[in-house]
Length: 80
Image (cartoon, rainbow, N blue to C red; front, top):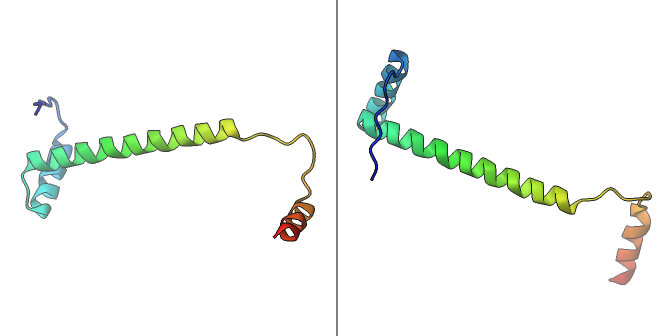
């Protein structure tokens, strides 16, 4: 496990961190670890979601002519 020292932490941030840790019954250090881990996981998930959207956009295309969805639907029903 790695160690991280945070300098010049705003007093209000430290106070809020201490308060939230007390509410959960954990140490302030554990609260900071949990919040950092959650933040990193959230960022990772957002990046993954963005990359999926980018890939979907690559697969999408603008049709060169109008699509007749009624005719398409009718054809699908006739096939089954």
